[in-house]
Image (tube, rainbow, N blue to C red; front, side, top):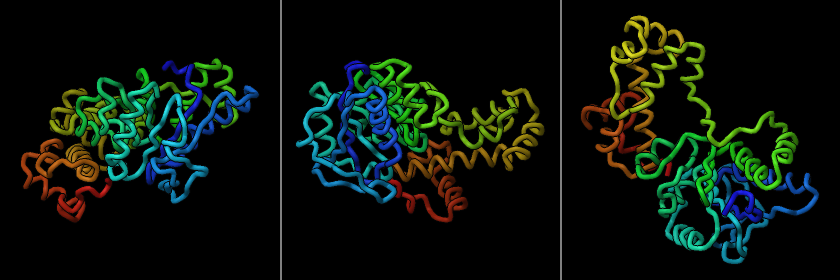
Length: 318
C-alpha cells in the first residue's frame, strides 16, 4: 500500500513500550486532522488480549482494545521499548504473520522491529531500529538490512527509531497524502524547526560529538567504531588518518580523555555487554564478534571493566 493511501492505524503496544515514540506518531495524526478540518486519519491503541499494558514509564494508554476486536487497519505499528525480546512470544508472532497475509502494512516503533524480524517479516527489506539495539540485532539477523536511518519505508514495511523520530516519519506520510504544506504546519504546531528525512542518520555517538571539528580525530573514531570484530591497532589508525601514533594519542587524550587503545577496548567491551544482554549468543560467540583473541582474554577484560563475569550479564536486557 502506498504511503498516501494510509489512513487507519493500529498501535500494537508491547509491555514496556516507549510511550514517547507511540505518542509522537499518533499525535501527528491528530494534529493533521485538526489542520485539514476533518477526521481523515483514525487510530486505535491495541494489544493481543485487549488489556492495556504499561509503557516503560509505568503509564498506560486508554482506551485499549484487542487486535481481534479492533477491525481492519491500513497499517499496524508494533510499539516496542524495553525488554522487547521478553514481549515477543508465539502469540504475537502468529498475529503479525496473519496480518502480513492480508493487505495490512506493518511497521514498528523503537525496538518493535525486533518482533517483525523474529516473525520473519523483514526479509530483503531496509529496516530502522533504535541505535542502542542496532549492533545486537545485526548479529542476530544478519540477512536483514538494518540501517542507521531515522526511519525506513520499504514497500509495506515502515520501521522507525524511537524518541521523536516517529513524528518525522508520520509527517512524511502526511505529506504524501496531503502535501508538504500540511506536513510543515503539523511540525510547526509541535515547534519542530525542520522536517528530517528518513535517510538522515540517527544522532552521532557521544564520541563523534566530542571529536567534532577535528576531521582526523573523527575519521579515527569512525574507524575504531566501524568493525569491532576486526579491531585495528592504534598505529594502523594513525597511518590511515595521516598522523603519527603520538599525534593521534594526544588528540584522543585531549578530546576523549583516553588513549586510542583504551578507547578501542572500551568500545568492544560495551558492544559485548549489549550482545550479552540482548541476544542469545554464547559468551564465546560474543568474544569472537567483539574481536577478542580468546574467551579467557575476553572474560578477564570484561570482569575488570564491569566487576563481574560475562555470564552474569546474560539476558539482562531481554
